Length: 105
Image 1 (cartoon, rainbow, N blue to C red):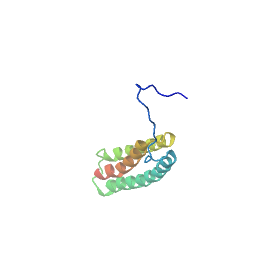
Image 2: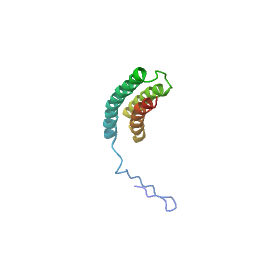
Image 3: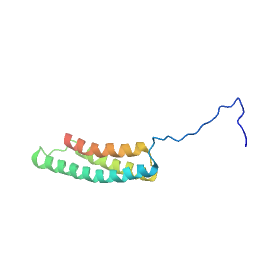
Image 4: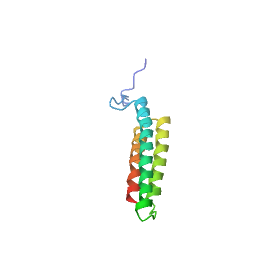
């Protein structure tokens, strides 16, 4: 057994006890896909409602809403492959951004 040299800083590696486990992050990512499906339905309904009752002109927000959902699905797939808290948070944020952007149209 070797001991560190007295002039070298001791490296202590401790795991963050508050960090979620990779399995928990994957479960949240899978639940995020269900949220994405629900937000896809809401975004489509908002788009169809605007087409029927509104002016019928696409201002680009509806397309941006659908692209946000696509990017949310990409972030969710990445979170399943490499479970990171930031990817799961991005998935949920993009899922909620889809209907929000469609409502702005």
